[in-house]
Image 1 (cartoon, one colour):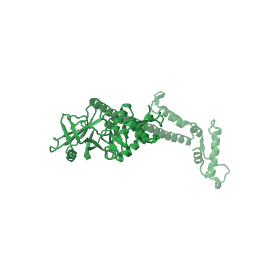
Image 2 (tube, one colour; image 1 turned 60 degrees about the vertical axis):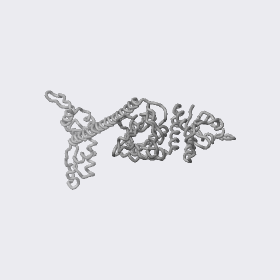
Image 3 (cartoon, helix red, strand yellow; image 1 turned 180 degrees about the horizontal axis):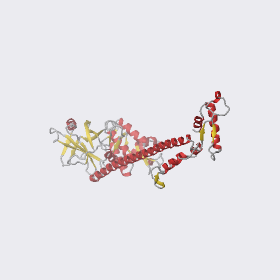
Image 4 (cartoon, one colour; image 1 turned 90 degrees about the vertical axis):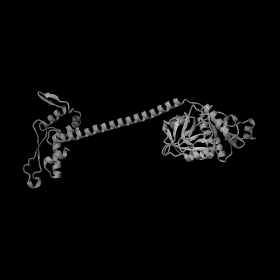
Length: 434
């Protein structure tokens, strides 16, 4: 049955609580006559649904079956009804309704102004209570004021603990301050372990209680610690849900408590330790991953930088050979520089008897020892007046057996460049082959 939180009902209940239209003492029951009175004559289901926290989305909204978890009647919200809703919702796994009823209980007890907004949580209240040693005592507002007045974190800072250990260790948080609001004693916590908050939020610690002592300071009642409980019933009943504020910049974690249920304290401690260990391991693994990725990035950058440096070195080498006429532009264009990048520059190989060189060194020596493919020689043209092109005209002289069309075209471009820029033939050749 898909029962979800009825927002209209929740908002109506909250408005009634703010208007102080509540019943905090009566037992809860609702009869068919009570339901019909809310429904009205003729039936008004818009009004009827406002008195329920649950909505069955598969039922006809114009029937009673569509509206679940009633919280009040006679114009009032019943505290006992909200407690009953939490018990039922908890059993049925209706988390949103369970939490909504808890927030309404907190608002009814006047906690919203002290818990959600400022981080204060209720830890104790006036009344007659029996402690773990079987001692029964009536606690008054005056007693709560004495506890507030005596508390000094610089003297003794009360820890937040699991259960009620003889020594207040380990601490999962600390009490920064205390105050009384009406019949309730409130505490403000700080430095609460995030993993502890998460477990509380998941319902691992459904109850809380306090340890008070007269042996800490001046023989007055002093807060020894706040214990979050699972298996041991709390000494004080009726504490509503709280919200535990985290540090600035974080989110606010909602913490739910109930009066019943049990849990193995040692198991809870083991789960908390495992959760903390898992979190630390996850953070460490993430850091290791980031460092590995950074090392890989730097290694790739180093390889690319070395490649570019070698490329510049080999280009300069080939350009020098081109200026000497041992390599043609076509050879460079064909990828001779890139070819050199792929040659091994470290491993030595014996290419001739008694001579060991790396493949790269061998290839560089091979190119350097090549004969000139193109030879540049300035020759003053016969019959030309020195006033026109003195020293600036050249003839193309070929080495026997090496002439080809590419060299002839290079010569023509050089001659044209020489005439246009009034330079030597060698300067023109160097300009056009770049």
